[in-house]
Amino acid sequence: MSSDNSPIRTSLAQTTLTSTEAALLGLLADGEQSGYDLKRRVERSVGYFWAPARSQIYAVLPRLVDAGLARRRQVRQSSRPDKQLYRITQDGRAALAAWLDVPVAAEPGHNVLLLKLFFGDHGDRAAMVEHVRARRRDAEQLKADLLEIEARASHTPEDRFPALTRRYGLEYADALIRWAEWAEGQLA
Amino acid sequence: MSSDNSPIRTSLAQTTLTSTEAALLGLLADGEQSGYDLKRRVERSVGYFWAPARSQIYAVLPRLVDAGLARRRQVRQSSRPDKQLYRITQDGRAALAAWLDVPVAAEPGHNVLLLKLFFGDHGDRAAMVEHVRARRRDAEQLKADLLEIEARASHTPEDRFPALTRRYGLEYADALIRWAEWAEGQLA
DNA sequence: GCATACATGTAAATGGTTACATGATTGG
DNA sequence: CCAATCATGTAACCATTTACATGTATGC
Image (tube, rainbow over all chains, first blue to last red; front, side):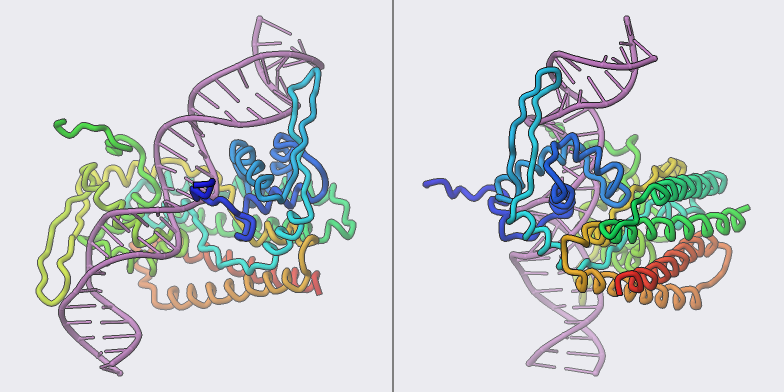
């Protein structure tokens, strides 16, 4: 009756966060931002390993507010559309910290390239070589991007953790490039 | 009335395959198998980079039959439950080949470990170190598994393509281990 | 005159997961 | 006697994506 018609995921409060919720809380942790702001910041930071769609950002934000993990504030603008600014709450910080403590399950890793390669015998060899080349180009681009970000990085104490993720990306890109070169040789 | 109540995704026929459909067709390409068989084969082969849930295998198989890409045959058994064996059709082989030709989009890569690490400042440092250690252990296990598979591998011409995927895994595992060792040092 | 940046949302489809449900046979 | 293997499926849930929808201001 009164209101407990238990829809989908009413609480979230005591539940553990989804990765996207956590990512947004993490970004909100260093200042009030709009969905639009968050989207841009995602692209230049966590987007390399966690990239929610724009529509999903706008879907998650109100959920955070409902759960008391963030607060919304409307800002009227004259020459721009009005915007909603979100600010993390103390509960939000606690939820983020709790999520950070949860062990990360071994990620099985989805890799469509490897899937195609595995069945390569049933397809066109030239196409397979091209797939590998494309992946190598992607890896070279990734490496270039990361080196540029690295060069611009502050290297302050707050940069400590993000630096770990950049290094991961570089190691990954190098491994990919080495593998692709070898694979191209194998298929030549 | 008659049956055309147009449900979700009636055709599939001319559509490009999903990765899971392709994976199952690829496995069916070398012989008639049941859902159960496929599940086991997935675990020991493509499971390293594409791992559908059991329930999804059973959901996809009938779809393949509806689209004319596979045929089903029921086998009565006395001492075991009856089983459904699936066999790939010519159309199925064509669909697989077509899917193999489609370029692979750059995979943005979801990595929850990196997400946690990126926001590591908001959590407990010891927990972060433990996350990295766990990932290193996973990588070492992966490497051991792959080396064993490599040792048992046939190295026949049909093994050419699968060999590419094993090598990828080894390069990846090594990169992960190197990174983790470095990261553990950074956080010590 | 046109593209881009600013700004926020909804709707529909879907690929996929976990949990539920059942039950015989074989081997230790 | 108990666990594992064989064997198949349904139901509920859900995170996420793509497409739809709208409108102003700025800079080229």
